[in-house]
Length: 155
Ligand SMILES: [Zn+2]
Image (cartoon, rainbow, N blue to C red; front, side, top):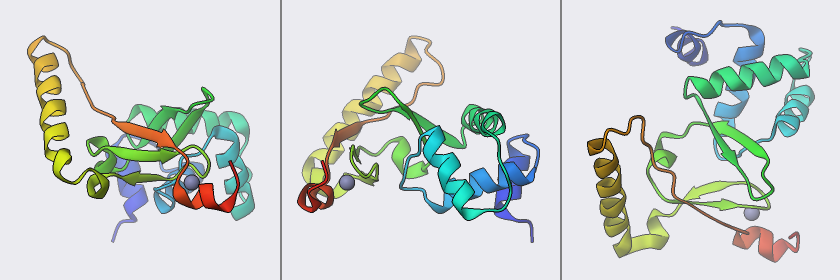
C-alpha cells in the first residue's frame, strides 16, 4: 500500500523528499491548528532529528500552498498561518480562535440559518463565475477567542 502522504505529494507533482513528507505529515496530523512559519519550524524540530533549514521550509510551504494542499490565511496580526487544507473548511462557515488558533465548523451554532448562508454564498459564487471569474472559492470565518481560552484567562 502506498503511503497516503507520498500519494498526495505525487498526485500534486511534488518530490517525495523526507522534508516534504515531514511537513505535510505534521500538518495533516494536526488539521485543526494553523501555524506560522516559525511555529511550524519549532514544532518540527521538537519532533524530528531531521534538520530543516528555514529556506527549505519556506519553499516547501509555498509549494504545498500553491498546489492546494495547505490553506494560507493572514491572521488579525497580519501574520501568515498555514494549515492542512480541510475539505470541510472550504465552504462551511467556521470559527477561528485568535488565541489557540483552532478552527471549528459552525454548523451547529448556525442551525436554521446555515442553509440561508450557504444559499447566499453559492449565489455569490455562481454570479462571479457567470461574470467570468475563475478559481473562486469561499472562506467564511468568524474570529474571536474561544470559550476554552476565555475561561483559562489567557487573552
Ligand atoms: Zn481558543
